[in-house]
Image 1: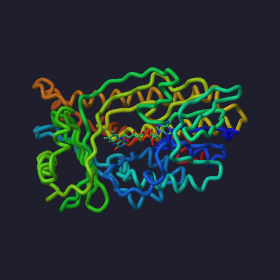
Image 2: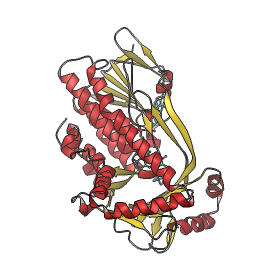
Image 3: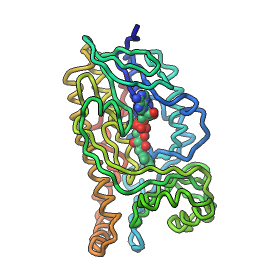
Image 4: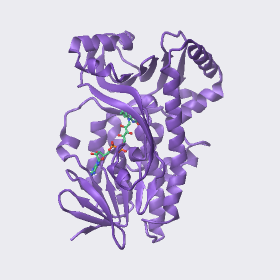
Amino acid sequence: MAERKEVVIIGGGPVGLTLGIALGKAGISTAVIERDAPSKLRDAAFDGRTSAIAGVSRRVLDGLGLWQAMAPAAEAIRDFRVAVGASPLFLHYDHREIGDEPFGHIVENLVLRQVLLDSAEKISALTVKAASQVTHLEHTDHGVCAHLATGERIDAGLAIAADGRRSPIREAAGIRCLHWEYAQTAIVCVVRHARPHHGVAVEHFLPAGPFAILPMTKQRSSIVWSERTALAPALMELDPAAFLHELGTRFGDYLGALEVISPRWAYPLSLTLAERYLDDRLVLIGDAAHGIHPIAGQGVNLGFRDVAALAECLVDAHRLGLDLGTGVHLERYQRLRRFDNFLMAGMTDGLNRLFSNDAKPVRIARDVGLAAVNRLGPMKRRLMRHAMGMPRGGWEKGPRLIRGEPL
Ligand SMILES: Cc1cc2nc3c(=O)[nH]c(=O)nc-3n(C[C@H](O)[C@H](O)[C@H](O)COP(=O)(O)OP(=O)(O)OC[C@H]3O[C@@H](n4cnc5c(N)ncnc54)[C@H](O)[C@@H]3O)c2cc1C
């Protein structure tokens, strides 16, 4: 016998789980199926992976009652400094120029997962099945059936693919993607430093790619170091002292002595954009719909914005007693999100190409551009609001969760 739910979400990463919580809290019976085991998701030691939670995502998490539990472990990004190669010019963004909210917060992925899983457990309309892999979806007379590797089956009116950038569910549905590799690999780790960072995030554009220093609690910083893919394996294999030396030459000495306090991770970087987010009783969300360059730390933030839009569309349809798996509410979600995600993907791709280029004419044009942005207050403020994920026209133009209203 198959279990019956209104919605089945494939993938319990940050985006799938948050959507499950939003739907479950609104009384929509939902199952989230996650391949990884609970021990890997919740009980592991801190592994050095973090997320930059932009202002917009903090609002979504707050609206779902999740932020309060994360806040003590989150470090605010109050200022942002952008430097380019050896150029003496740099941009300084101060959050006070656009209000009193910080640009965002750095949160350990482990904390994010623990808070989401703890909250999910308390929602009666939500079931999380961890250590369960969806092998395939089958269309039935009245909906869709998710087949699990355990042999279990879940019938639902709507399936949501939140299964990450490679999304086997998207592939099986035949949804094509725009895709390219960046020939860059992001090396990720955490350092402790002798001096406090005062909430300042730094993005240093180097010829091989951006080198980001993101402020964490306890006098630590998260490093996202984009390097040429050809060089990354050698860097990953360096002994700790040699790795620290290489890192230090890029980091600089403004925070005093450094110590690497986490494992190193390497992620080959690519761009993947699904050409559509909808199929027969199927919706794509998060990285399954759009995987972008981490240059602006926006990946998961786009996913949280998808959650705010899709949750509102589904909750409204549910209140009207409509079939969740088909109808204009799904078209509305696609219309609300596809252009925005496409724009952010284009912007991050363009920034990466512009700044990872050491040709002299490009360097000169870049310096002129930086100087202009620094002087043009309105343009600078617009960029800052964009980095926070604020919709055009202010927070009140976003979906209810972003406006700070109940779902
Ligand atoms: C180096 C790097 C740094 C980054 N830094 C940031 C940052 O600072 N800020 C930011 O916003 N974003 C950042 N990102 C992007 C961010 O990591 C992703 O956007 C985010 O993880 C997407 O979340 P998701 O839930 O959509 O997908 P994922 O996190 O990929 O989760 C997908 C889940 O689906 C599960 N799954 C897959 N297939 C199945 C199946 N068949 N059955 C069941 N479960 C399945 C997987 O186990 C996984 O848990 C970064 C990315 C990289 C590579």
